[in-house]
Image (cartoon, rainbow, N blue to C red):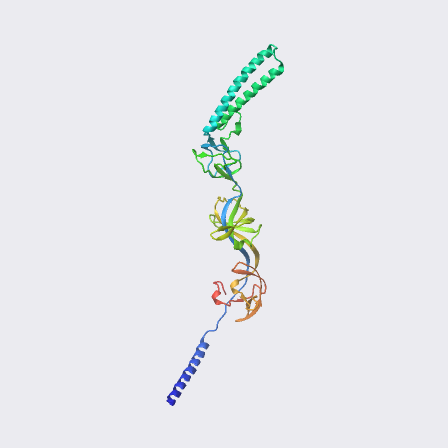
Length: 370
C-alpha cells in the first residue's frame, strides 16, 4: 500500500513539472506585444450643446377686422409681398337686427324733431321779419333748427354704417376695406370668400384675416433641457442647421433664455431665442424645423489629441501620455488639457506635434492609427 501511494505521488509531481515546462515553452513562443503609436493634430475644437426648435419671423402681425361681417373679396394670397396700406380683403356687413332697429328708431325721432324745429324756425323768422320778436329770440330758434338738422344727419349716417359699414364722407376710413398695417410677406390667409368674421375689440380678439411678417428678419425659437441651461448665456454664438436646407449652416446669436421652465414629457424645458445673422440670399420658410448648436467654448487651430490616447494617474487623476523615445520604449509625459468636444481635446502643454503617442489600449485604436 505504501509503495503504491509513493508511486502515485511521484507521477503527480512529474506531471506538474512537465506541465510547467510546457507552459514556459509556449509562453516564450508568443510574439511580444507591439504597441502602435499616433500623433497629435492641429484642429479647431468646438464644445457645444444642441437645442431643437423652429425658424419663425421675428415679428408676425395678424390682420384683423374692426367690423363684423362676411368676406366678400380676398385680394391677396399666401407668399405674396405686400406694403402697409395694401388691400387685404373686403367685408360685406351683416347688420345686427337689434342695432338696426334702434338706429331706425333714432333716425325717425331725429326726423320728427327736425320737422318740428323747422316749423318753429319758419314761424320765428316771419315774426322777426315783422319786427315782433328780437334778434336774440330768432337766433335761438335758428340754433335749435341747426342742431336738429345735425342730429338728423348723424342718425342717418349711423344707420348707413350699421347697414353697410360705411357712409358718405368717411372716404379712406371705411372699415369694410381691410388693409395691411405693415410691409412684409403674407404667410397665411386662413379665411375664404363667404366666411363670417368677427371684429376685434376690447372683449374679443377677432378673426384673423391674414398674417404678415418680414421674412428678412427670422429667428430661431427652441427648447433646451434644464441640465444644459446652466451652461449657456446670452450673446453666445450659435450655428443653425435647417433640416430642409442641406449643406448649409447659418450664424446666429443667442438673444433670450426663458427665466421660467415648463414641464414637457416629465422634463423641464427652457425656451431660447436666437437672431439669425448673415443669411445671404437663402430663403428660409417660416416654421421649418432646425437644430441650434450653441457654442460654449471654441479653440481655433490648436494642438489636439484623441481623448482615447490619454491616461489618468490612479492616485492624482492627472492626465498623461506615453511618448515613444525608441523602438517600443516609452516615457511618461504629463499634460495640461483645454477644450474638449468628446473626441478630441486641446493640448495646452506636455507634448509636441512630432511626438509619437502610445496607443495604450489597442482596442481603442482608430483606422488612421500609425
